[in-house]
Structure formats: C-alpha cells, structure tokens
Length: 65
Image (cartoon, rainbow, N blue to C red):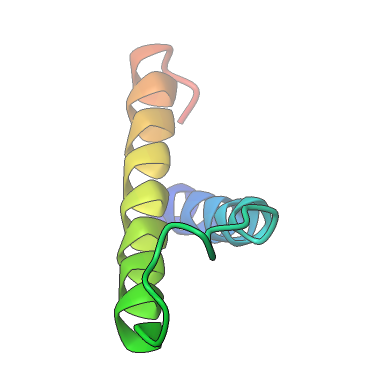
C-alpha cells in the first residue's frame, strides 16, 4: 500500500510537470475557460491513473513490489 501511494505521488508530480509544457490554447474556443480547465483537469487525472496502474502492473508482474 505504501508503495502505490508513493508511486501515485511521483507520477502526479511528473504528469503535472509534463502537462505544463504543452500549449493547448489553440485547441479550445475563446472565452471557454472553465471548460478548458475542466478538460485539462480530467486529462491529468486520467494520465495519473493510467500511468500509475501500468507501473503497478509492471512491477507486480516482475515481483518488484
């Protein structure tokens, strides 16, 4: 349990750091700020979940954790 919590924290930091480098202003319509922020939030949560579960499955299949 401690390993997965630590992994979630590390992946969260990495996802936020990597999403900061993406310029997504041209994708969204003008004056739709709330919708853009909500999409960005859900995209971040989805990436955190997918990457963490992939790494947990990878580690458990190789029996690192």
